[in-house]
Length: 265
Image (cartoon, rainbow, N blue to C red; front, side, top):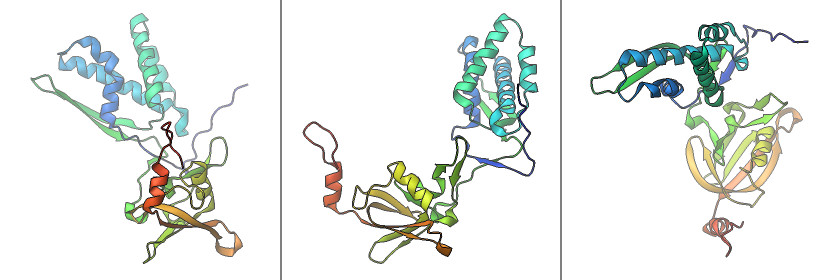
C-alpha cells in the first residue's frame, strides 16, 4: 500500500537557511560534466546549451523534491523522458546523482539566467533566484540584537522534539546584561541552555572559558560562575547564566598540554 503525500497547506510556510554558495556558481559546478568534454575554448552557444540543460535539471529536481512540502515530479519525469537514449540517458543520471550528492538540500530555483562570453575566453553566468511556494529565506536578525555563547547564536540553537521536528526560540526569548563590573548575566530559554550543554558549548560552573557575545559586542573568554532558574507564572522555564571574565591563569590551564601532547583541562 502506498500513501500520497499531502500538498502544503497554503496558510503555512517554512523558513530555511539558504546556502552561502552563489547560485550561479552551483549551477556552473553542476554543469561541469557537460562543459569538460567541450575543451578549453568551447563556443559560447555550446556553453549556453550545457548550462541550459543543467538549469532545467536543477529546477526539475528542486520541484520534485519531497523536502519542500509540495512535490511536483512531472517536470523531472518529462525531462528524463526527453533524454532517452544511451549516451543522453547516462548524462541525465550523472547530473542527477551530482545534484543529489551536493545540492539536495538547496531549495533555490533558477527564475532567470544569462550567460556572457568575452573574446579572451572568459565567461560569466548570472542567475536570478526564486523559492518554491511556501518557502521563505531565513534572514538573520541584526547582530546588535543577538546573544552568542560558545560561538553559537542563541536564536539558532535548536533541540529535537521528534525525529523530524526541532524547537528553537527567537531573539526576543533571550536577553543579556553586562554589569559595570564586567559580570554578564544572560536569561535564556531552558531548552536552549540544555542543548548548549549537550553540544559542549557550555561546561560546568567554573569550567573551561567560552566566548560570549551580547548585543553584537564580543566580550571574549568568560567562565560560567553561576546558574539559576527563573520564569513567569511559576513555569521556571528560564535559565539564568552568570559569566565572569576568565583570568590569565584559567586560560593557561585550558590550553596547557601534557608531555604526550594531549590537551588537559
